[in-house]
Length: 252
Length: 135
Image (tube, rainbow over all chains, first blue to last red; front, side, top):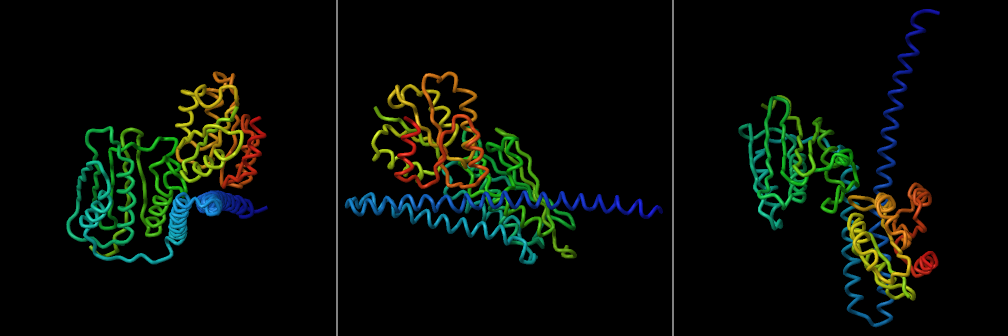
């Protein structure tokens, strides 16, 4: 037996084992996706069936007030279902289009998203901006907008009204290769046992959660552009999300 | 003598569907609605003797996929915390879900306290089935 024959199999074995672990992780992701998509897309349909079967009863009984109410509710659930399907499709497709760099003024994107998000918020929220770079920066504008839309929307929804001041702080810094955006809030935070769910699809932390797709979408978009996402959160104190977005090579 | 019902579900429409089905079926009384597991645990603790007819079992319909505690965790917590204190009154849990996943069905079947598994939307034949379970 020569040395090559002894070394090669164990290296191959290690490679195979690592490949197997990778596949198992992908499989787990897929089965979670199938379960979540099955539930979240089917649940509104089941409710619609229930409502429509009442509608036929109400029609026969001449109970038109209830009939109208239930038809309107069924219609609303249909719209909701359509938008859920669109969102799932959006996550599934994230990463197919190529990254489009353009010169972006980060501050104006932040302000645009902010005023959009707080328009219907009844409580007074304060935006603190701490931008550590000057002038426009060459990044993927749509990804930046998507990140800020989702992170600021979460910060607003998970605000802690028991606190005397409600603050969302957006800060940024940039070097030659990446723009780092941090969105921090003093909201209700995420309990530690739910941290693994944060970027997973169809996970709802509590009733304030949206469709359970926003942060999954953010993660996919950021990672396909070569960036990274991370967060820290303490229940009762707040959350802080940090995103590194690549800057167009040679643009600065 | 009518059977009191609690529906634990975050979806308002599904609570309405259950409330309407039970209120138009013989044998059932008050339908109490809870929007999540935590609200149910408070409700059952604070007024388990005040819900419906004291001599009757309580039927509790529990959704599986809810924000916060899911249906299984909610039932687990009830069994651990309150089961013994409420030994005088039987709580009949029935899963109320749109999930037909084998994993969910198996988990429900393996849980002590869970007597049934009903797929949404709730139909009249489901209500008859639940009446039989509670009697």
